[in-house]
Length: 201
Image (tube, rainbow, N blue to C red; front, side):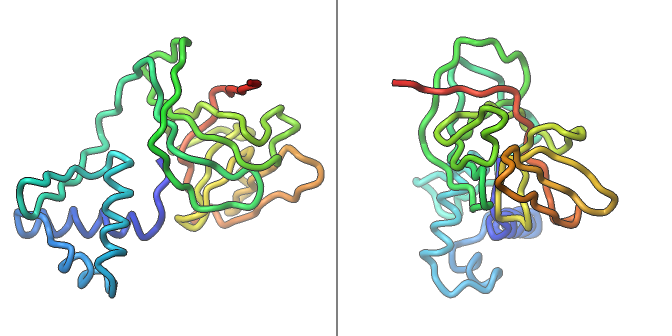
Protein backbone atom coordinates (compact mmCIF):
# COMPACT_ATOMS: atom_id res chain seq x y z
CA UNK A 1 0.00 0.00 0.00
CA UNK A 2 1.12 3.49 -0.75
CA UNK A 3 2.44 5.37 2.26
CA UNK A 4 4.00 8.81 2.41
CA UNK A 5 7.67 9.46 3.05
CA UNK A 6 6.87 10.82 6.51
CA UNK A 7 4.76 7.76 7.35
CA UNK A 8 7.68 5.54 6.38
CA UNK A 9 9.93 7.60 8.65
CA UNK A 10 7.45 7.06 11.49
CA UNK A 11 7.40 3.30 10.83
CA UNK A 12 11.20 3.12 10.68
CA UNK A 13 11.51 5.13 13.91
CA UNK A 14 8.99 2.88 15.70
CA UNK A 15 10.76 -0.28 14.55
CA UNK A 16 14.22 0.98 15.49
CA UNK A 17 13.13 2.35 18.86
CA UNK A 18 11.30 -0.86 19.81
CA UNK A 19 14.25 -3.03 18.80
CA UNK A 20 16.65 -0.92 20.87
CA UNK A 21 14.50 -0.39 23.96
CA UNK A 22 12.24 -3.44 24.01
CA UNK A 23 9.11 -1.28 24.21
CA UNK A 24 7.35 1.16 21.93
CA UNK A 25 7.92 4.94 22.13
CA UNK A 26 5.49 7.50 23.49
CA UNK A 27 4.03 10.19 21.24
CA UNK A 28 6.43 12.67 22.83
CA UNK A 29 9.42 10.44 22.00
CA UNK A 30 8.20 10.02 18.41
CA UNK A 31 7.84 13.79 18.04
CA UNK A 32 11.30 14.39 19.48
CA UNK A 33 12.90 11.67 17.38
CA UNK A 34 11.43 12.98 14.13
CA UNK A 35 11.71 16.69 14.91
CA UNK A 36 7.94 17.24 15.00
CA UNK A 37 6.55 20.12 17.04
CA UNK A 38 2.95 18.89 17.28
CA UNK A 39 1.65 15.78 19.04
CA UNK A 40 -1.45 16.12 16.88
CA UNK A 41 0.72 15.50 13.81
CA UNK A 42 2.15 12.37 15.44
CA UNK A 43 -1.37 11.20 16.27
CA UNK A 44 -2.45 11.76 12.65
CA UNK A 45 0.43 9.66 11.28
CA UNK A 46 -0.16 6.88 13.82
CA UNK A 47 -3.89 6.82 13.06
CA UNK A 48 -3.29 6.67 9.29
CA UNK A 49 -0.76 3.85 9.66
CA UNK A 50 -3.13 2.00 12.00
CA UNK A 51 -5.95 2.34 9.47
CA UNK A 52 -3.65 0.93 6.78
CA UNK A 53 -3.02 -2.15 8.91
CA UNK A 54 0.66 -1.32 9.51
CA UNK A 55 0.35 -0.59 13.23
CA UNK A 56 -1.57 -2.13 16.11
CA UNK A 57 -2.66 -0.18 19.17
CA UNK A 58 -3.98 -1.40 22.54
CA UNK A 59 -5.94 1.28 24.32
CA UNK A 60 -5.78 -0.53 27.68
CA UNK A 61 -2.00 -0.27 28.10
CA UNK A 62 0.66 2.40 27.75
CA UNK A 63 3.34 2.32 25.04
CA UNK A 64 1.01 0.17 22.96
CA UNK A 65 2.07 1.00 19.38
CA UNK A 66 3.24 -2.17 17.64
CA UNK A 67 4.48 -2.43 14.05
CA UNK A 68 2.62 -5.15 12.12
CA UNK A 69 4.81 -7.52 10.12
CA UNK A 70 4.20 -7.11 6.37
CA UNK A 71 5.86 -10.40 5.43
CA UNK A 72 2.76 -12.60 5.40
CA UNK A 73 0.25 -11.39 2.79
CA UNK A 74 -3.38 -11.33 3.71
CA UNK A 75 -5.48 -13.99 2.08
CA UNK A 76 -8.22 -13.08 -0.32
CA UNK A 77 -11.74 -12.95 1.09
CA UNK A 78 -15.04 -12.05 -0.50
CA UNK A 79 -14.35 -8.38 0.27
CA UNK A 80 -11.42 -6.23 -0.80
CA UNK A 81 -10.34 -3.13 1.12
CA UNK A 82 -10.98 0.11 -0.75
CA UNK A 83 -7.75 1.85 0.23
CA UNK A 84 -8.50 5.28 -1.20
CA UNK A 85 -8.28 7.30 -4.39
CA UNK A 86 -5.45 7.16 -6.93
CA UNK A 87 -4.57 9.94 -9.35
CA UNK A 88 -4.91 9.34 -13.08
CA UNK A 89 -3.70 12.84 -13.79
CA UNK A 90 -1.29 14.91 -11.72
CA UNK A 91 0.09 12.74 -8.88
CA UNK A 92 -1.51 13.35 -5.49
CA UNK A 93 -0.93 11.91 -2.04
CA UNK A 94 -2.91 8.68 -1.65
CA UNK A 95 -5.50 9.00 1.13
CA UNK A 96 -7.04 5.90 2.63
CA UNK A 97 -10.75 5.38 3.25
CA UNK A 98 -12.40 2.84 5.54
CA UNK A 99 -14.62 1.32 2.84
CA UNK A 100 -14.58 -2.04 1.07
CA UNK A 101 -16.13 -3.56 -2.04
CA UNK A 102 -17.47 -7.07 -2.49
CA UNK A 103 -16.33 -9.25 -5.39
CA UNK A 104 -17.64 -12.56 -6.70
CA UNK A 105 -14.60 -13.22 -8.86
CA UNK A 106 -11.92 -15.60 -7.69
CA UNK A 107 -8.62 -13.78 -7.49
CA UNK A 108 -6.70 -16.69 -6.02
CA UNK A 109 -3.94 -16.37 -3.45
CA UNK A 110 -2.61 -13.03 -4.71
CA UNK A 111 -2.72 -10.06 -2.36
CA UNK A 112 -5.11 -7.63 -4.02
CA UNK A 113 -6.60 -4.27 -3.06
CA UNK A 114 -8.85 -1.74 -4.81
CA UNK A 115 -8.35 1.92 -5.67
CA UNK A 116 -10.86 4.43 -6.98
CA UNK A 117 -9.56 6.29 -10.04
CA UNK A 118 -9.57 10.08 -9.99
CA UNK A 119 -8.90 11.70 -13.37
CA UNK A 120 -8.87 10.66 -17.03
CA UNK A 121 -5.24 10.09 -17.96
CA UNK A 122 -5.99 6.38 -18.58
CA UNK A 123 -9.16 6.90 -20.59
CA UNK A 124 -7.76 5.24 -23.76
CA UNK A 125 -7.51 2.06 -21.67
CA UNK A 126 -11.21 2.58 -20.82
CA UNK A 127 -10.23 3.42 -17.25
CA UNK A 128 -11.96 6.67 -16.37
CA UNK A 129 -12.80 8.85 -13.42
CA UNK A 130 -14.83 6.95 -10.81
CA UNK A 131 -13.75 3.45 -11.92
CA UNK A 132 -12.21 0.99 -9.47
CA UNK A 133 -8.98 -0.76 -10.36
CA UNK A 134 -8.00 -4.08 -8.79
CA UNK A 135 -4.31 -3.98 -7.94
CA UNK A 136 -1.98 -6.86 -7.11
CA UNK A 137 0.49 -5.74 -4.48
CA UNK A 138 4.00 -6.02 -5.95
CA UNK A 139 7.19 -3.98 -6.06
CA UNK A 140 8.12 -4.87 -9.64
CA UNK A 141 6.51 -4.62 -13.06
CA UNK A 142 7.22 -5.50 -16.68
CA UNK A 143 7.49 -2.96 -19.46
CA UNK A 144 4.13 -1.54 -20.46
CA UNK A 145 2.14 -2.82 -17.48
CA UNK A 146 -0.34 -0.47 -15.81
CA UNK A 147 1.02 0.20 -12.34
CA UNK A 148 0.42 2.15 -9.18
CA UNK A 149 3.63 4.14 -8.83
CA UNK A 150 4.78 6.25 -5.90
CA UNK A 151 6.95 9.22 -6.95
CA UNK A 152 9.29 10.81 -4.40
CA UNK A 153 7.72 8.74 -1.63
CA UNK A 154 4.53 10.79 -1.54
CA UNK A 155 2.79 11.18 -4.91
CA UNK A 156 0.86 8.16 -6.20
CA UNK A 157 -0.30 7.82 -9.79
CA UNK A 158 -1.77 5.25 -12.20
CA UNK A 159 0.23 4.92 -15.43
CA UNK A 160 1.91 2.49 -17.82
CA UNK A 161 5.44 1.70 -16.69
CA UNK A 162 8.52 1.98 -18.94
CA UNK A 163 12.18 1.86 -17.89
CA UNK A 164 14.44 4.01 -20.06
CA UNK A 165 17.96 3.61 -18.76
CA UNK A 166 18.20 5.33 -15.38
CA UNK A 167 14.84 7.05 -15.92
CA UNK A 168 11.31 5.75 -15.52
CA UNK A 169 8.59 6.95 -17.88
CA UNK A 170 5.07 6.84 -16.46
CA UNK A 171 2.96 7.00 -19.58
CA UNK A 172 -0.68 8.15 -19.56
CA UNK A 173 -3.12 6.62 -22.02
CA UNK A 174 -4.50 9.99 -23.04
CA UNK A 175 -3.04 11.87 -26.02
CA UNK A 176 -3.78 15.20 -24.33
CA UNK A 177 -1.48 14.46 -21.39
CA UNK A 178 2.31 14.29 -21.19
CA UNK A 179 4.22 11.42 -19.57
CA UNK A 180 5.93 11.76 -16.21
CA UNK A 181 9.71 11.23 -16.23
CA UNK A 182 11.59 10.56 -13.00
CA UNK A 183 14.89 8.97 -11.97
CA UNK A 184 14.34 5.29 -11.26
CA UNK A 185 15.41 5.64 -7.62
CA UNK A 186 12.58 8.13 -7.05
CA UNK A 187 9.88 5.74 -8.30
CA UNK A 188 8.48 2.89 -6.20
CA UNK A 189 6.07 0.36 -7.71
CA UNK A 190 3.22 -0.32 -5.29
CA UNK A 191 1.26 -2.75 -7.47
CA UNK A 192 0.05 -3.63 -10.95
CA UNK A 193 -3.49 -3.48 -12.26
CA UNK A 194 -5.29 -6.81 -12.70
CA UNK A 195 -8.70 -5.51 -13.67
CA UNK A 196 -11.27 -2.76 -13.41
CA UNK A 197 -14.77 -2.35 -11.98
CA UNK A 198 -17.29 0.28 -12.96
CA UNK A 199 -20.58 1.28 -11.40
CA UNK A 200 -23.34 2.58 -13.68
CA UNK A 201 -26.08 3.14 -11.12
